[in-house]
Length: 115
Length: 114
Image (cartoon, rainbow over all chains, first blue to last red; front, side, top):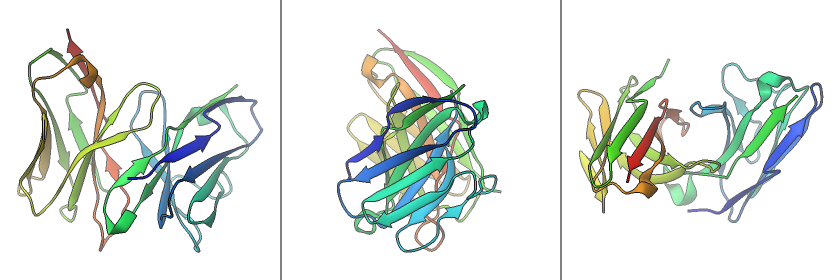
């Protein structure tokens, strides 16, 4: 498995501003994923962020709104841009392909409220 | 597109009883099926998984069964305890030939009554 930390753990932001969420892993990983979990809902994949390549976004999510960086094998950031109240959610990063396994391990999440 | 249905959405059981959660997937190419437990305020925790070449897998009080023909898989928790209370999510994916992304079910809120 892997130990994953996220910063911040929670934040309250004003409409129209941006927030960058950090994800740090305690080991080198090939694949990192960013998910959104709206209140009381399931997890929806935003994008896959593999080191050395551009992030791949899922339908309904665009780079201008959710830019992602993946500068090395242990770190990634997700920015939520020009926020609106509809962006209030939990944002989770996960890592996968550890030692060739199929498992994904999740961070604790960042709880975002937009007012 | 790919879809995973999960039932029931809520489940209440008496402590010591068994709980069963069922998921059905649409993509016949799916070959890996993990289950996650999410406690309040925490990220999902992987509790058990199964690959398509196996029909059943067990780990102490939890087990997962897979029926590839019917495209459904189930989580079984025996001798439930209050600390089993959480939201459980199933997922399906198609590694390594496909992508590693997971399609999640809608979740089941399990309450174990003491």
